Length: 349
Image (cartoon, rainbow, N blue to C red; front, side, top):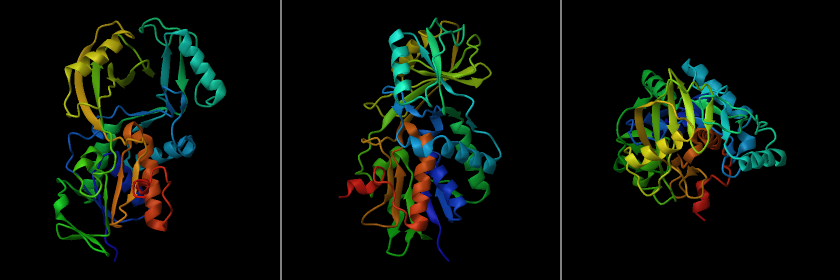
């Protein structure tokens, strides 16, 4: 009988990898200690099919949209019996300057006609500061990421598939035929550790560029938004007059704690969009596990074929985690080659 595969970490990467393992009837266990630094636990949950600053399609767009992302999230929702994926909550870009409208329309006409909607030269919401117009981003959506991760963890526990403990790298023994962890035998070990990869003795040399992000939850009864808006920051309606507002990027401070500087940065931007009363309900911080070349780390160690990794998803984890999990699962099942751009073999030439 084949031994199970051990997945280390149950953030977005570990959750989606185990989901695809289940679809493929691959036996597995997950070990995770619900680490407070997890970027998945504090993710804003936006699915954005474009690179906003450059107005270009996101990497792997054609593989992801329109079908793969929506159908995959719907499958997961069916398994868990709850909704986490909200395609009706599209991102709406607010325009405060005529040049931004021109850039949007040029981008739409040149390469993004099916993604960037027409500019509506009217106000999206009268509670917002006066703006010249707005436009929706097609295929964008919102995912209730904390609930998804939490509910999936409950499901794993109920199915006796979760080892709730901190992983000890020194307790791994590797042979040609299997991997032992604390005496238990596994077919492979796949690390989905996020920023904790810096402590991994097999993959710590991979060029990670972690980025800290901070987010505020605001109670703003007068805002009355039903759509996600973006204009230098995002404002995501959560219901009951609560909004997730952010986010920040820092590469020089990777402490997983909220800071006054980030709070002031977010509030300064927010005040340019909304002048009404609000209260700060929560302030969170997380570390995004990004790669220096902005491509994921997927595959198996060249010297230890039973040790693998799925990491480096960065700000696009919500769309890349399912697709990269699919690629890794097909590689295990059929030997299907992992795309070169995301295979870790690009670092072992």
